[in-house]
Length: 275
Picture (cartoon, rainbow, N blue to C red):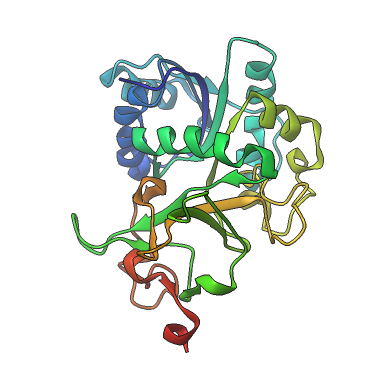
């Protein structure tokens, strides 16, 4: 059963026919993410033929997609930032409970949404937020590789929050890029009314900043950012519910790329193992 939420989704889609395959995969999966769903494709597609091609993808999966084509945008890199106009409109409607922005090649599963909802409540009093972890595969069905982490993580040195049993917790990765955000009404209000929704805020490049959400806003003392990755303490393993597939797998399959070279199962190490 889909999570009992009403979710507004914005997908940034720079019109490239070769990327239809990724948008199709996202649309096939969207209905499982929420009991009520509203999906807007933010795109630079200008003509009616291109619009029909995008809308047809949603129709194949029973989705009535909306299109938002920004006017007077200026530089193409500002396309992702155009989604804020849509999100402000959706946020003004009190019936929406959650808001998700993502890039057009990031596959979010139902179990990831359920994890984010549960983890949000666990972390609520800490001022921290649950995160996802982008992953790729070298071959279909193969091992998962962490897209954005380029060195093993010394878990003993990470800022952490652990539950009362000591069996499950969250750790902080500085500057972890998610390519998305998932916020409830309270955190979305903070995002839209604060510096984090301004293109000049943040340390990443302009396109990536559109997906930062509250990553660097009001960071609690002792943490490098607000976003936390879940893990099983005794096993020293990432909770796989947080994994989201970066569908192109372009880093994992490129031997010259420094990203997506560490298997998720090998990501967390003790200080001794890292040395």
